[in-house]
Image (cartoon, rainbow, N blue to C red; front, side, top):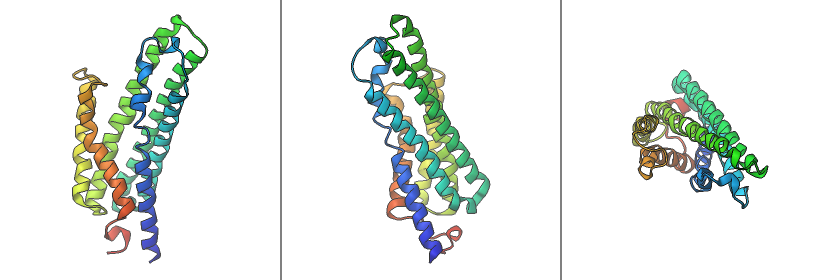
Length: 224
């Protein structure tokens, strides 16, 4: 009974952390002004961009937390792959931290009234952020979901249909990322986000499922 209760708590924690990884969605709008060529010359509060950075930090930390929480159970299925998932999440978080540093550097230029001579620098910083975002919140989530989908599919901890969304969504997101890298599509084109829909659906649905249902009876949880 204690093992079952512990597994339920683990599922609940992992589910909540997965849902919290969606808190940074507003940055798609918040960071919009940063891409205007005269952002550092303009006026107005910088607090929305700073809040966006805080939201990204929350995503980085909850991403690591979700992988660590699931590791305690998934290692019984395949310890090597479960450990790879944790490492992948840590790498993803590292790129997010670097991206936040780049964004806040642009804010500092603005606060210090760097002037027109800093326009090129701010443009380079925003471009670097976009590429770091592509790696940290584009390529790495695809890898994460492939690893997690594999583990969940073979362990039977969640419905296999849900696991398949992650297994299919990972390569689709990777395809979109490579299209951006090779300039086939623009990173901020409206249609580019379609590549991320299955991954977002997988992670959000997984979070809800773990919160509401917990793990399904499985040999690796000791309740089957």
